[in-house]
Length: 368
Image (cartoon, rainbow, N blue to C red; front, side, top):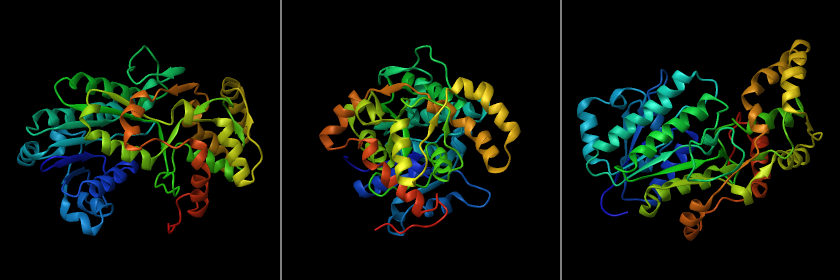
């Protein structure tokens, strides 16, 4: 990093964003961060920033109340102009990751929000780089090996999240000719590989919790379905490095476990059965389950098991995936810096242990 830097970050209070902020502050002591954060009804943007930035580092952080889904990202004209004059880099990770948004709502945040951040970057007179944090699941319902150079190949999507992230990435790709930047595609982000710590108990954690608590053991999916997960410490380190690496500009990079590091549903379930001393999972053809078995169960079950049936619909397609993510660009760009994702099975028990110690996020845990 050369000269003074003002790095604008969206999505700074998200699970990944918090770690990106911490790593930028640690790695680049001369840089100043500008955090674009939405006010909440119960918490101002400044209060939200104070909850993630250590007191000793707050002098290096500027906080702006804004929202990427609003015109000019919710900034007044004077602030917008000043930021565009001073910003040297943009890391855009703000998005809705909900699967149940309507298409219009998901587009308002993920596509139009990205368009507004790109428009801002185009006006930034000192801009050196733009890093867009997308998702590997823009691949939608494809199977086989997904290459980093591929995006729209006629695939369908499981939900509005995947579709709108693909649309947003298409928009970013169309601007990379005029804006120096990189597209980063993480797969499913989980807790820290060394400590297991996570602040987000979504995605893999939800089915894991109901299995560990013996509420459910039937998997409407295939034992050989591939689950590509990556720890947040790896993804944050990779984002920080690639956002400032000129050799990455113009490329798309899969931040994924890849063919050599991912695991199957059966491998993960077997490890979970051992750790939680739970009965082995049972696998049912998903078409049969959702067409015939689930409707009957929904009529006969009540209470927590019925809620499991209801809430589990959002995750059903992720038990059937038979695709792998090529990581050639990631290996080429990150391996020289000693950055590579650990194989899933190498740190899985640490994730499980933190789930138990924290009671699935309900208790504070002291990490040594």
